Image 1 (cartoon, rainbow, N blue to C red):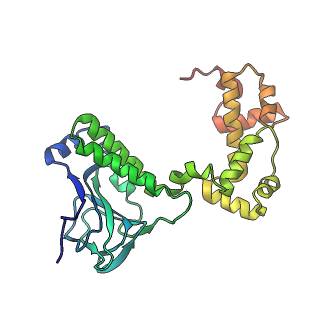
Image 2: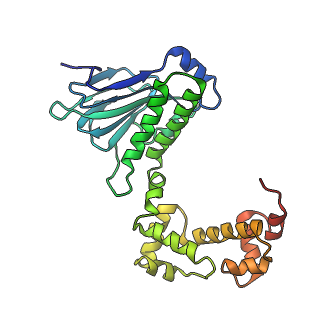
Image 3: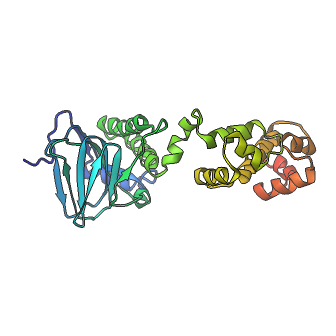
Length: 291
């Protein structure tokens, strides 16, 4: 027996056509918007076949196992894996007979929705770690679902769809979504950045930074660039200039004094670095009206 829906404790919201028309005319959310959302727990005999949907479809498995078939290629989807099926892509999917999946699913569309279809039609595994934030992602789903379930007021619709940006972003930008946990974990790069921030008044070398986290310079530079997309010294420079901006904004310190506070003994060199990063000199920055 195959079933489209009808699972114990399932839940779903399908937005009416009239509401979708309103969303398309709402400039705040028409770039990315949910059209259908649901949760199927232990979805025994679950099966769907489509010639293609006009929306993108996110299937996020939190337990059990299922499969998705696209272009005669079947992919097994297990716990902590997801797939985004691109709009207008013919597909089939269903639950494993012996160990049926539990899935959260969202249909979404919008002028910019394609940007969030990373790895289209290919399953993606979310690796298990102390920083995974699986529960936080489910809470984002619940935020979307609960607001839509409460009705289609303008505020409910706007808030739910703004949450959709965050939820899909948590999948596309997995590393960034986990950073709040990494700050409090033994992650070496997070530890290194914390060390930088605590020693901005010093001239730190790559050797010092690498030794602090127990890596060789080559290992450290490679890992740092992979995690942040910047070299360690470039990242450090931006932290120093960030602090210098704060001192220029909120203190009466002279520029040469601020230079020392962020590890530059030569105020002229500090001015050159500051100007390169910020696009204007420290003096002009201080005199710029902000806020």
